[in-house]
Amino acid sequence: MGDEKKVAGVSPCTRCRAPAVALVRRTGEHLCAAHFVASVEREVQETVERTGMIRDGDCIAVGLSGGKDSSVLLYILSRLLRDRPEVRLLAITIDEGIAGYREETMKAARALTADLGVEQFVVSFEDAFGRSLDAFLQNPAAPNPCTLCGVLRRRALQTAARRAGATKLATGHSLDDEAEAALMNVLNGDLKRIARTGIPGNAFVPRIKPLGGVPEKEVTLYAVVQGLFLPLPECPYAGQALRSEARTIISTLEYRHPGTTMQFMEGYTTLRERGAHCLEEEGATGGFTRCEECGEPATGRRCQACSLLASLRDE
Image 1 (tube, rainbow, N blue to C red):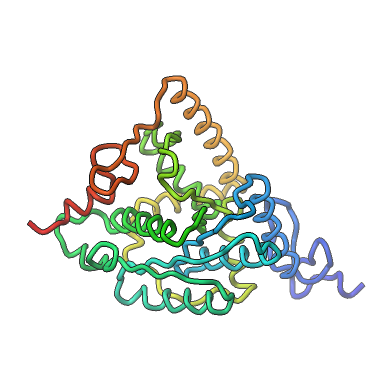
Image 2 (cartoon, one colour; image 1 turned 90 degrees about the vertical axis):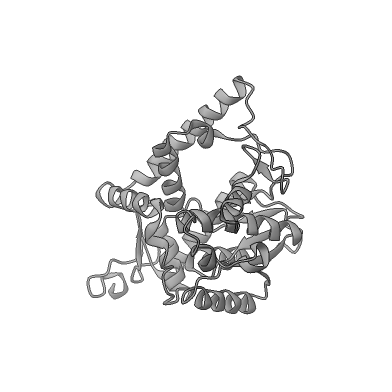
């Protein structure tokens, strides 16, 4: 039959024989646009259901940067939760204050929340910490831009989520993102950081990662197919992060040896579980106390955010 033939060298969809847009390595299927979208959404739904990360009565705050990953997360959750009125969905956008970059992504985030009818909360570094990221980085004592940004953004997200009444904070980390973070933890050789589980009760709004089982390429293609992919500028500080090197390692291995990322994460999960068990046997709590300045969880007298802010404070 004509509709079962390849179109201009494109493989037919395994399920309906329409032209495929992707080869999904985790299933071995060639999928057309419609079946590919359904496949990604089903993977997210199964992750949510398997882990019980979203329950009735939850208020889910999505960390929405305006980039493709967080936009895909908000879009998919809005679809999956549309028949669950008992679950509230909102978005939190952090404006770090990066000239020539953040303006466009902020605009994209506002447009998406307006289209989806999702309430959005916007918090700037200037409001939360008194300065923009660009201003902080003018200080010669400032650390790597991504380190500073990551620590302060996490604090701002947590504070905003708590104030908004969120019970869960959802981030757009994909399978690749999780593998990159895991690789960095392994390279740092800190077992307590890998296995740390002893967070004081109710200290943080719990984080969830519904896209954690979806490869980055599939997240990107989903964004393209659903019209969520915009030609946005790249953060000017991105190339200075250790994560960028970890990303290169992971992507190279995955290209040469398909399935490596998933296998690495399975091994990492086992290592994390065993490490957590060892800490429990030792009676350890992960070394957490309370920051003497802000009351947030800390591994010393001060939490990371307060320590960084103190080091950058004007004399």
